[in-house]
Length: 280
Image (cartoon, rainbow, N blue to C red):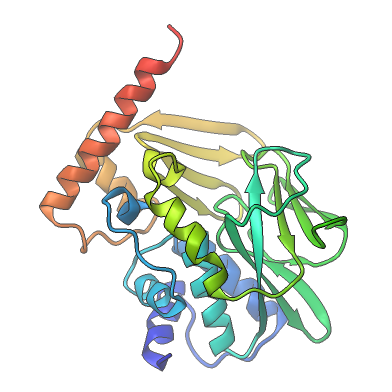
């Protein structure tokens, strides 16, 4: 991988100058990534899902795009590698079932070891921790959001991240190291299968120190753990694209007028179908 790819990526994160691996540096990198590189599936919605090669993801981030977990943690892991961090990739899986014990393979997560201490590092959950968590059984509070790490025992040896109040209350991952090829088949399914949530619904998330910005279709939410969510419906395409660029920091220079019209039509159609399905 070339230096230029990561130079553009670091510029997007607002990080300049030489970088020596440290816990403080790792924390700053994850915070910056979550605040400036959105979780998003715009290209999947447009029928052109990007591959998950980490170099491609790093290039996309440097150019102002985002992605979902295989892109976000794939690219972030590659950036950390380039800076000299000791990074391990793991097969994981988010689940709606709070008691789930299996690792279903729909998530890529990272651990990083610094000076003998291991950290859980994840820039690809959308609503996950703002900063890395020490990889040990404990509970953690970040800006009012509650997380807990526990051992995953039995057939699957690894860890569970408990995300209290989130739509996916657990994310299980194996301790064993993984490589990007381990995620290729699931990426193909998630980015092309008609029943995939990435195909059905446009989603963008951005995490900062005090809350989460979430766009699902035409509904923009600000999630504050102390006050609850505040929702508003976006009124038209101009407001919609302003939110993509302004709230989520997603550069739009790759979207032609045809792309914009197609994306808005798809989002609006899904929104109208969702409204029609709600109880009267």
